Length: 298
Image (cartoon, rainbow, N blue to C red; front, top):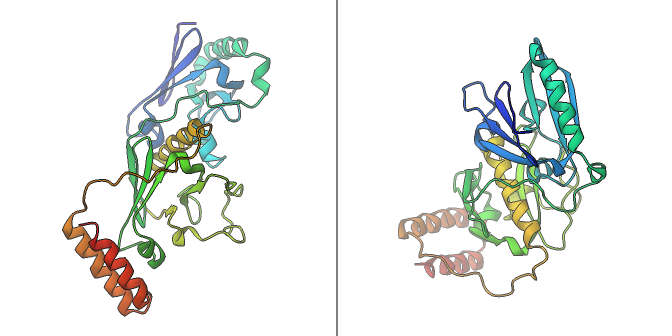
């Protein structure tokens, strides 16, 4: 097509095999859009296209992706609010005729496969490295390893006992993301061979599952911690890397040891461990073993 359609908060640039969505960075633009910046959507990733009346004299051009085509929407699992859907282009009502033209052009690109789930991700995930601040720790992802570093002000004693965590994506089977805008939001890393929790609604964790605040493979969200525009792209990037490496055998070699820890950080960890010990939350044996482990990192 080779044309451009400018709407509210985004501009769609049509190419021969894809549409490039560029998001504005204005103060009224949803923060998720600003975080994504731009996304190239292959026409092969689309299942349908609609044009419907919007609010306050607007129309909405909506390109609906195929299930399994976009890691961002797969990670979101239906939890994104309508106003944050990156596949919606809101236009002034006077552009309805032009929007209908482009809707028809997009529909013409759809093939018989459009009705089928995608066998692999067709839309590129947000790029690593990235990180965000959760309530109980800082999550980082460098493209190969996910790391959780606990905050002594928010992490549970179970997480402090376990220590900071590092997860090679080759050993993961999936990601669970519950929106911070819902009750008890969290990001959980799922080991290979374990099915992710299909229930992403505001219900208690399934029977037999460890609560996220007690699970060293999870970080929990809170007011201002793990916002959608930071934690969802993070989850999508990890999920894409997991899917890409699932055909590779799980690594059995030890994870390489990183740089030595800051002595001040180790001292703070030992002090907090002592507080837990005095409070009776850590046994004498656990205290001695964990202290020795921390000292070994110096």
